[in-house]
Image (tube, rainbow, N blue to C red; front, side, top):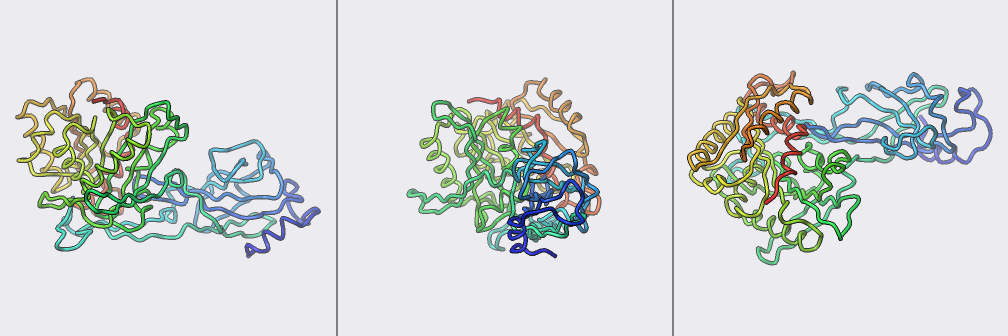
Length: 426
């Protein structure tokens, strides 16, 4: 095993390396960086970037020359940096791509709640997060063995998209609250232009003092900041990190709801943010916050993406004039009947609601067609139920809790819904 000190020293050694394949003569590994990526169910280790002391010819690389214990090497290529997006014909970095489907890929192990308690909010008297999944965070590390060279263990981590967010804190002089938050500023930000803002609010299972938790737990925040989404809709993304429960199953909220709105106001004043294009979204407890915000501030958001949440039907009449896309699972024992009750009230108030039941295992093309079919109805409120039996992946118990937490694993991957949200204006 080659340690970090020896890697660095090896970069200074001149001359050919005896016994190495011809493609590697005189090249030394200077270090290794673990590369992570966030998926619908959390963050995963998906590659390792090896740094060499000389440019590597990508045409001479072979995946067969690299091994990572317990992982599947899918491809190997040269890069200009540790970012796989910087793929190049030659470069001082070699990206060793790993299958995200490997058992060893997830860095955030979720154990769905046993039974059906705690979805989507929870009783603050029981302490947050009530009934939420048990979460175990694992370190992002890997050891790569290169044929004829040896083994190198990662000593740094690059978190794709997550690293593009700034971690900040807001002190609200109106409520006295202190709120940690993550902010993504568009890469091409120009104060002479105007940008939308997406507010994402996490579930009770992501309650934490670590502001990165909400970015690592799933796609709810980071998907809007990805290069493809930003290319279509350059936008700010705001992801608060709550250290306690903000909305509970008694349909009560704390002052943090107002603090979050005050933070949105501050950002809109400090940056060139279009107040006609503010969007709210959240999962479970975050969905409940989105609903509560739309009730209390009915003129604020242009549209909201509501995922696996519920609220008191007697309080939701102000949402009849809102633009909403709702996704819930039929097997979710609280959110599904809860959203049925909400949409029934909105229809009674005169709102047009488009409804559909989708297969949670649909391909991207199938989801795109399903979105287009709903958009054709031109309804301001779209209600999607994911068919029972198509939501919970193999290996997990198909109960209310499993259906609940897997709703957002699926919902935020659906590109057409995100595009619909971003197309709305006040």
